[in-house]
Length: 158
Image 1 (cartoon, rainbow, N blue to C red):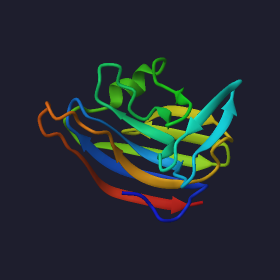
Image 2: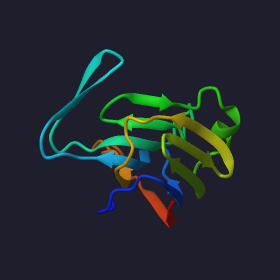
Image 3: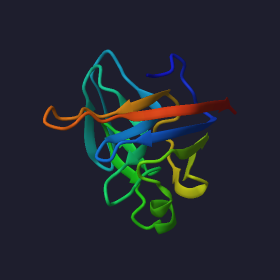
């Protein structure tokens, strides 16, 4: 599910509950183009196929690394701000329970928190705007049925 509008500066709050083993997230400032696109980053050419959703994602991570609320660029640069050096944020995620995610985007500044604990902070001007979407990756057929639930979504344009 994604917005039809493009957003630049905003505060997004959402609660989520995710089954263990599922990889999910909230796409922010994301895009999808009808034609293949490419861009250069740190001397590397990154190609994005037509129709591929790509852009910033606030991760929901049920693995032991616990990088929920870290910032990942889906379909392009990968991890931009993981939580490997933020133990309080890693411990704030509650497996099997409802969690609160807060995202603030102002210009090139992006800040996240999980259950009130500051998580990621990033300065990035490559992706200044885009749609917002609730995301879940495919689950292999050999796995049990898994779900991610979202509620209480609040979006305030700045």
